[in-house]
Image 1 (tube, rainbow, N blue to C red):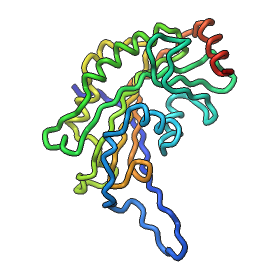
Image 2 (image 1 turned 135 degrees about the horizontal axis):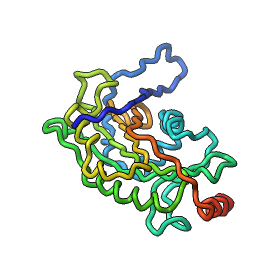
Image 3 (image 1 turned 180 degrees about the vertical axis):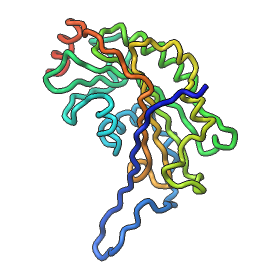
Amino acid sequence: MKIPVNALGVAYDYEEVLPGKNTIDFFAERFEGSDTDTKRIEQVLVRWLFTRSSAKKLLYSVLDLYSDAHVKFEISEPFSEREFDVLSWNQNAPEQAIAIECKRAKIKRESFQNNDVTGLKKLAEGVIQSRKLLKVGFYKTHLLIMTVVDGRDRTMYNQLSRGANEKQFNKIIDFPNRSELPEEVGLLFVEIVQTTDAPLSRTGFISVSVAKPPIPQVQKRSTTEKIVLFSNN
């Protein structure tokens, strides 16, 4: 099943300006022997995406967050018994907090041979966990599906087109149990593509897709009080 999404993306490449270097070659093929970024720990990727990635402004924009928003990671107490990934709110607006459950899928270097996607069952678990997170009573709740793609071998395409192919894309968009996601929960898809042998911190492509906006809820007063105390600690 093909499900339309609205996507925005950013390609980035950082080059060090050295003395005596007269030219800089951006978006060149890199053959630096870097390891695959599909091996990165999920929590590390989430922190990088929200704080240091070139797509931070784009992500904040679709989440209605300002650049100086509070962002906390791997949260449980005092809000929930189980840990969720991101809690954020704009300055002076603790009554409009955003809770985000993140789940990762992987497209490994060899996955393009059989159109495989690793971690689809984990995405289904995100639906269950988002449903529980919704009950905590935040202003907005999101499920963020993060796909990390090792596109280093796809040199037959330009660096903007080395992400998931059509079959892989459809598997991710129509992930198991998606239809059971509560209508109040927003759904975001983020694709992070390692385009060359350089690490993601240096060059890559990131797209952010809003598949379904959340339905804002009146945040529980007790939740707002916890956020105020939480931010002061």
